Image (cartoon, rainbow, N blue to C red; front, side, top):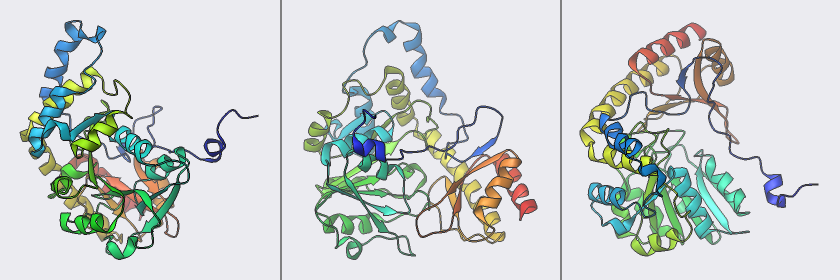
Amino acid sequence: MSYFQNHIDAMTGYVPGEQPRDRTFIKLNTNENPYSPSQKVAEAMMPILLDGRLRLYPDPLATEFRQAAAELHGVEPSWIMSGNGSDDILTILTRAFAGPGDVIASAQPGYILYETLAELQNSRFQVIPFPVNWKIGPEHVSGLKSPKIFYLANPNSPSGTVMTPGEVGELADALPCQLVVDEAYGDFATTNCISLVKSHSNVIVTRTFSKGYSLAGLRIGYCVARPELIQGLNKVKDSYNCDMLSLAGATAALKDQDWLIATRQKIWDTRSRLAAGAAELGYLIPESHANFIWCEGGPPAQEVYAALRDRDILVRLMSYPGREPALRITVGTDHQIDLLLKALGEIV
């Protein structure tokens, strides 16, 4: 006998990337930033640990954090909502806009959590396959029947490809629902869709600190949306969904854009070398605008993944319906990528 709802019993559930604890790996499987966060993050958090403030609840509206994010993006604080990582934001959006039987759509291959969120709501998940150029246009979504949400990872995971704000705007115009532009990797791209939130009433942009700001362990993210949407979303979020330390650290990180610019450049440089090295081994690699590369074709992905793991190097083996398994490889430090490329050369 099960006490769960039928649709919960039937679902598989989201499976995160492997986080081994039993031995030390070169970890290139979950797109963590290989560099330590800004020193200003620790400086902002330390006083809270020492002065007794942890006995108090955090600010439920994240006032100081929202002010910092608003200044960065050129909007008012009323356009910002914080979350316990951007996955929390995605959960809030799904709970707010979709229910049992509703259609949630997404371009795929994409972030696999979107389907899990639809299953949790007992909604119907509809896949829009990416064409070979990794661009979704109005012609691709014309057959959707009354969708409630369309999720677009941009830059996309796992491909690292990006659609321009103009292309995303055309997609938003063609959709009768909220278009959630998931910019988890936006800090590594040279463009973003924040401006579309102002010009399109159905566009919401989500961001995280796990990638660009090296704060995956803090669990902090946010969305940019019109104030009337933020007011409604605040009804759905947990009362205190962001802790005091995370808010302080994230606020300090936002204010240290010099650190972000310098770290991003290092990752860009290493990404170029990683992509070139993998391409020489026969992989087909779309141009990445994220902190990883996507390797299709070439040597069999499952065999390469296993051989790398035997050498204590973790990459992400991913499979999508209708496609052969492929490898997603995080951009690590130069030394880590040297070891990876050496191992790949030996395996291939």
